[in-house]
Amino acid sequence: MSTYEREPTNATPPVIEAVELRKRFGKVVAVDGLSFSVAAGSVLGVLGPNGAGKTTTVKLLTTLLPIDGGRAKVAGHDVATDPSAVRASIGLAGQSAAVDDKLSVRQNLDLFGRLYHLPGPRRAKRVAELIERFGMEAYTDRLAETLSGGERRRLDLVVALIAEPPAIFLDEPTTGLDPHGRAVIWDEIRAIRDAGAAVVLTTQYREEADQLADRIIIIDRGSVVAEGTSRELKTRLGRDVLEVSLEDAAQLSAARSAITSLTAVAVDERTLHVAVADTAQSLVTLRRLDEARIALADFQLRRPTLDDVFIEITGRPTGTDPEAPKEVAA
View 1 (cartoon, one colour):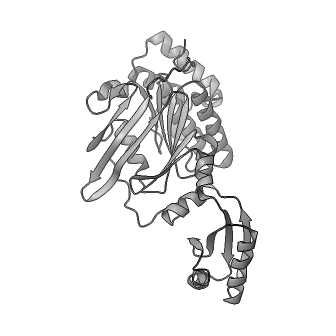
View 2 (tube, rainbow, N blue to C red):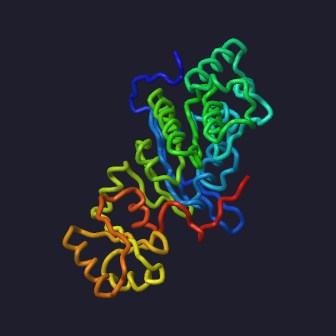
View 3 (cartoon, helix red, strand yellow):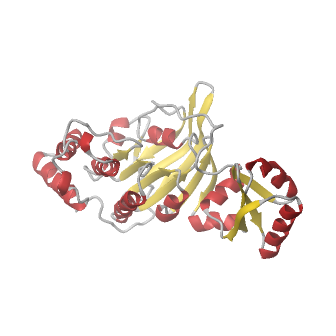
């Protein structure tokens, strides 16, 4: 039976567990007391801006960086004391493809099968299965360096699955892909989850977490600032969002001053997100902006998104955080 086939669950321990994880790089605290768990057959979405600690967390759990504090287990193995067993139990697809540019797609898959010590016949069967499942027949014999960005991302994901590991770590697997390429990877992540693997998915994209994650943690500067299902997090905001775009970026400060009694957060130099209780409060907000002679390019009232939850909590959008320390490469 494939290790991805579901079995009955009777309060089984989580496949991935982190407790009070900590990591410093000199004076920079990259991970500050992170705790979470991931069960078999589920996806944990780790959402946050650049520099939040997402990639560092993945590196800690996959033994690529030593843990400074706390503890973690993957597939029952302690990350700090049994790293070899952890590495044999995981698949990792990082932000950049880990494949060998000078090898073909088939050769890369065979190489990773050898690294996982798969016997020859099983390795050949698994390579053929993955090539067919992921629709890679057309470029099986092409060198990795000739692949498009989407094809390389798909190959990176496939090599992480070669040994059918119980734990999969996907570190921003769709960054830089077009909408079609992203949708293809999303379908594969759903298939991995449905087949029984525990998946940690880091992403900057709120819609990706919304679509794929069974539970979500939002992290900022190395700490968990919110957690729950997508529905729970949106309900937490409890209000609609009035999105106001200004004609003149120079009026942003004046616009915020005009509605100081409301929660107004700048998304960029021309846009404000304003949490409002109802339509009446939206109209009051627009009237105040008009009285302050703020020229509006556009506005819309909508239901909250995960971006809005993050903005409400941190005061910044999920895309980028220029003030946060950059994650340090190992």
